[in-house]
Amino acid sequence: MRLPRFTVRTLMVTVAIVALAFPLYRTIIFYKKYYNMAIFHSESEKYYALQLKNETFTKFAPSVSPDRQREMMAQSVARVRKRKQYHAEMKLKYERAATHPWDPLELDPPEPE
Image (cartoon, rainbow, N blue to C red; front, top):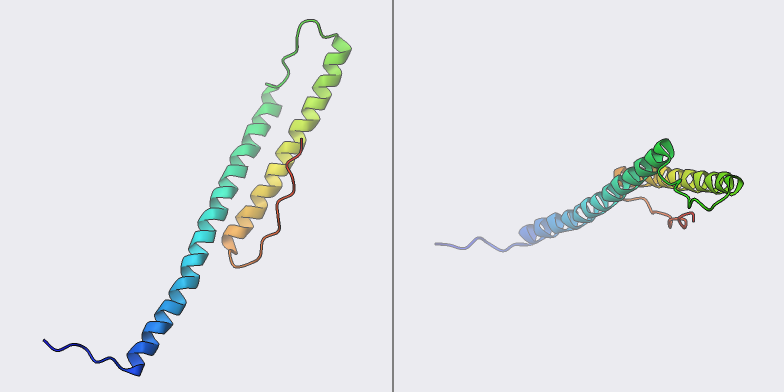
């Protein structure tokens, strides 16, 4: 059995294939990473929307006065709305990043408290 000839042409073709494979691999890795982050932020947004809908964060001790309960309720609603908005923005950011993985990505802002 005769071995194939090793020529400059075969070397150039091999280098071209490898040169195209590495960026493609990197693009696929970034797509998966950004897509998973978009799913995470989508689920977080749904969680906070459900909290707002069901008001599941409004359990107070019986000794708390009604005025203080209203104040605490308003603070809780504001905090949950900020978190929901944050995750909605992050979801859009990562959805765009998943479809354009070659673009640079800015750092995430800190999550609201």
